[in-house]
Amino acid sequence: MKDDKLLSGELYHIYNCGINGMDLFRESENYEHFLSLMDKFILPVAEIFPWVLMQNHFHLLVRIKIPNPNLHFSHLFNAYSKYFNKRYTRQGVLSKRRFKRKHIDNERY
Image (cartoon, rainbow, N blue to C red):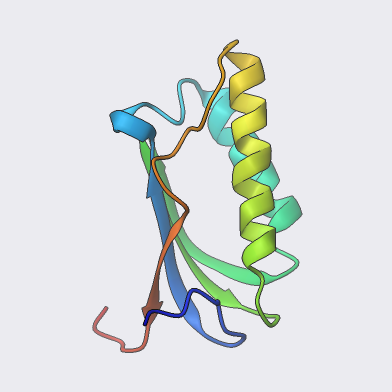
């Protein structure tokens, strides 16, 4: 059984994409807002290494600083969804699933 907890001291590849290929970022203001939310919710609980925000998906490489910071990541994605929905007068989810994570346990990855 897969454990979804993010473990302190470990590296993770965090990623997700828009529902049905929908764009998560439509204009530069969207990218800037997502980055400011990352600073607010993720920097207190994880070191952020390489990241990329693409029109319909994103990738983050993070090292977790505290035990089980999943709620902080959820707050980031929920806050961004609320912002996006209000900005573009829409309703509903932005991503097709919970954020995905891959535990990085070797240098090759």
